[in-house]
Length: 126
Image 1 (cartoon, one colour):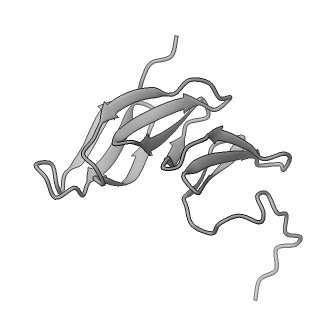
Image 2 (cartoon, one colour; image 1 turned 90 degrees about the horizontal axis):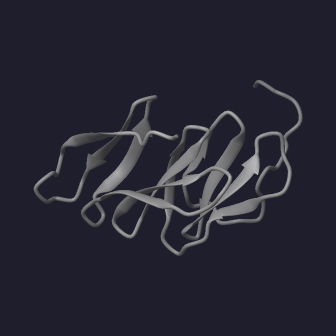
């Protein structure tokens, strides 16, 4: 048994369902269709995306990338107005990852793109 020391609760008392993801500064968690954010060092929890069906997947430290209403969207990590990056078939995405240049996802819709791994260029920020 390995003991690593003291545990710190970052987000407590919420549903256990949802994705968890991080960037260099924050921890993000899907709760009941919304995306919550808390600094990795601890602190107040805030709502980044208030929705009933948003599902977060990744952050590059500038934007959070998530799926809502059959679209891959992004929103600044500081909050603001979300941008629709691309519309996708209903229930078609089960995972999403990114690197410095691209966003990648898989299509599990059963439709024309089913079984494919897709990518698109990440938006360029001014």
